[in-house]
Image 1: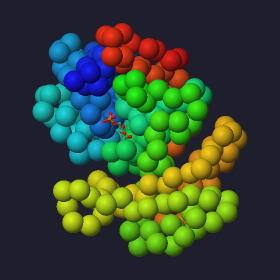
Image 2: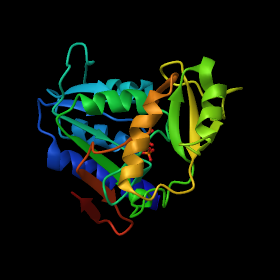
Image 3: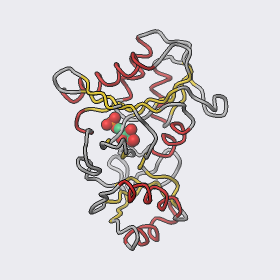
Image 4: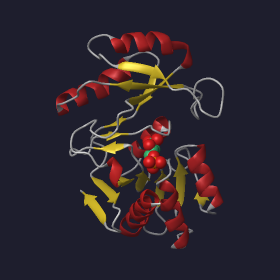
Amino acid sequence: KLLDDAKKLAGYRAVEDNVKNGQRVGIGSGSTVKYVVDKIKELGYTDCICVPTSFQSRQLIIEAGLKLSDLSITPELDITIDGADEVDQHFNLIKGGGGCQLQEKIVAHASKELVIVADYSKDSVEFGQNWKKGIPIEVHPMAYVPIIKQLSQAPFNLKATLRMAVNKAGPVVTDNGNFVLDATFQSLNSQHEIEKLNVQLKMIPGVVEHGLFINMTKKVYFGQTDGTIKLRS
Ligand code: DER
């Protein structure tokens, strides 16, 4: 309940502060973003044009009766509001807890601004301080075994495991038909190392996208348990 209220606080305030009726809005994925859509609807912003980042996000837009579009029709967005699994003091994000990182990063990249909404549990100083499940890496199914092997070696030294589904036999299959690896790391204690990894991961054939969102946002709303909001910007 406390956590949910914190998510709601962040989602509502981010919309109140940043969205105007008629804007082209990227809608992220996850549980916090649900409140973003609720607030857009509540404010009656029926002229907003909304682009989803997953089947879940698309359903939220449709069920709220908001205008649905896609990047083919609306290739440039004014703002994307999305959740995160962790945000460190340098605005490095770990995303992909919900397995939606590919479309989230594409839509964020197509936006003039990315605003993150999160509950207090995502608020970190050091990278990897709170989120211990590793970096989500979306991979083509044919290559997951060789990629796990390559990730275990230098220069990565990551322990990657295939994300298995809970309500389906076998691995999680993303909205794009790919698998997800969760890659835990010992220490990534410099911005330089994080930025290097951000690029190196994408160079591995078969890696489609990953959940490191580096230098993509400058504004994060953290909902607190006491009804307040902590804004990092
Ligand atoms: O998958 C993602 O990147 C989502 O944004 C997600 O990790 C945030 O999830 P939450 O809002 O349900 O905590």
